[in-house]
Length: 124
View 1 (tube, one colour):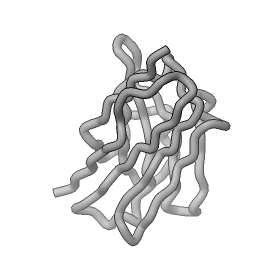
View 2: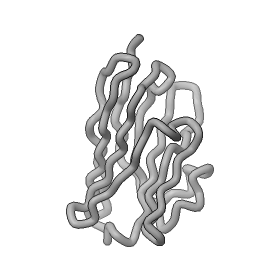
View 3: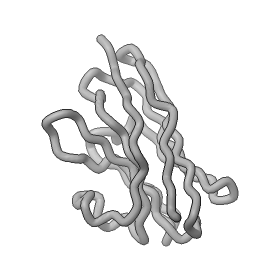
């Protein structure tokens, strides 16, 4: 069974940093692109970043571009999202997801596998 497990969320002050991790099992990890998404109450799920399994490129949406970095370690079947300069507007549940490409960051429902999410709360 495919399983993705996020960790690293918590409470942080505005301007601080967090590193979220995603541990994968039950799939050939290096065959899958890993995306990061978030969802705040009352808002749609939003794509943040993706690490492509096809060409090794990384992608970022405007919400996090310039202050976040995505990485992966195929040997350990893990992926990470480093988030800096956090703002109260970043408060949300953060998810990692796996799919065969990064082509559908704007369509979260099309992604194949999802973790359970980890809460990030940024206080002012």
